[in-house]
Length: 121
Image (cartoon, rainbow, N blue to C red; front, side, top):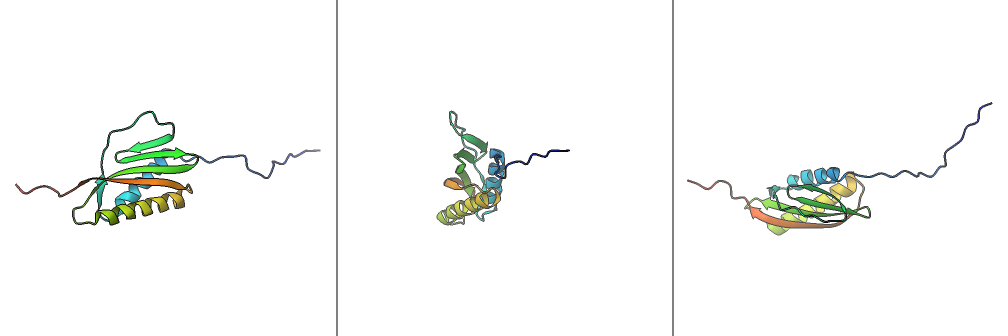
């Protein structure tokens, strides 16, 4: 006679998303916004108490299952800076919420430079 034990129906598991995944989604989404030329390298920070990911131009914090981001961008010269910044915020928040299922608490966008290309000799 065999006995089978069934597991309880409620799940005791937990899903964690590696910060690198969030950084990748953020980078690809920000770079896809028209007018964004590249991410700008900024000095790193130390001493944070959060799980974090870093990439040139992206600082990420995950705290209590929500995401906060700081993006440092270089834009093309012909764009409306405010429009591009708002589009980056909206698109990145949507991408993270849709692909990873985590709420976005804050996205700070810093425009570090405008890329005018190579100057004529």
